[in-house]
Length: 399
Image (cartoon, rainbow, N blue to C red; front, side, top):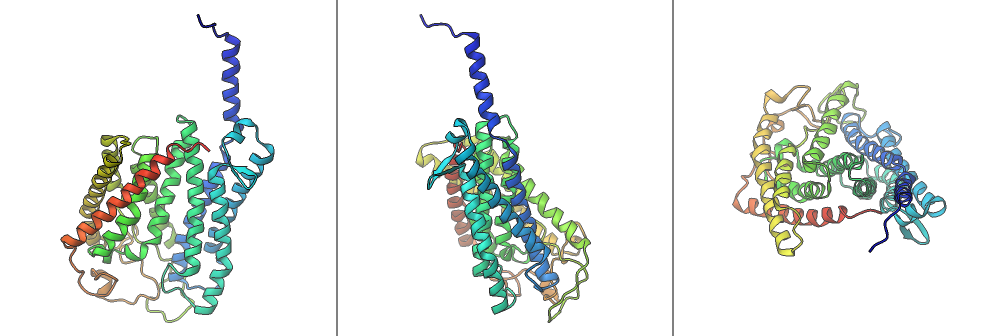
């Protein structure tokens, strides 16, 4: 007969578990989420600054917000490395990853890498502008390095939040994961914003790019999140942050400083109204609830095809008609910012309220034919399959 467990041993075990949880404070997760927020706000602000004022100096407030996020994210990651290497107790050391003799949570290492990439891109970006002038495209070489750094900070914050929610399912980690997931989704949307103007939302390129970038992020967040309806909540965070920037930026006066000026604006230009991702996210959550967690490879592939189909079908249904609304006079107000997102370099004309061909040429949009839909579905399915793999892995992260 097994020896009975004494009440003192039960109390000792409970105290040990409580001590292990209390050893890991939650403030690093909050600070890293704040760093990711600063980066997102800064990049949206910086794009507005470029098309409202022009690039007059490197030391703009928008740039400072971006690099504050990078530097603070690196500092949080660095502190966690110091703490887990020299100051941590046994429980914290066990919940860390060893790199070159030092120890830190996995998210901290990713954030440190992101901070290094971001801060390295700063002088590169300044030299690029001095040598070549204004950006013609968002994704220039220094911006690509900057984007990788931003990805590192957001992934670091995401992994720290995932670790917290997986260790403490009833704690605040689940909600923090949803919030950082919204930032992760918004950063992806920003980097494809050249392809997501309302004028391109009847063109095949819009649906292909969106399927490749956004399905992965929504599915991975929906699979990894432990709160109810995680993908839907992540999409709400994304839309909320984007809408706040649309409504706040035009409150500040701005005048162009670089010629030629084709659109004499007087206030900061807002971003385009966010994509209605809450609807495909809701469909993704419903499919994930139905399929559950299938470990067989072929079932996961079938789930990916279903998720890709749901994402694309719902996305086309809502975005196709919403784009027509955004190009109509009914959207030209402070709430939707229709026809108010054009910078000083965009002259007036009917082209601003017309659908464009693939690539952005003026004129009627090429129809989204059967072949384009199939290609977009395959891209969405591959993106969803990768999201399932990564989301399933994130549900297991505890370091």
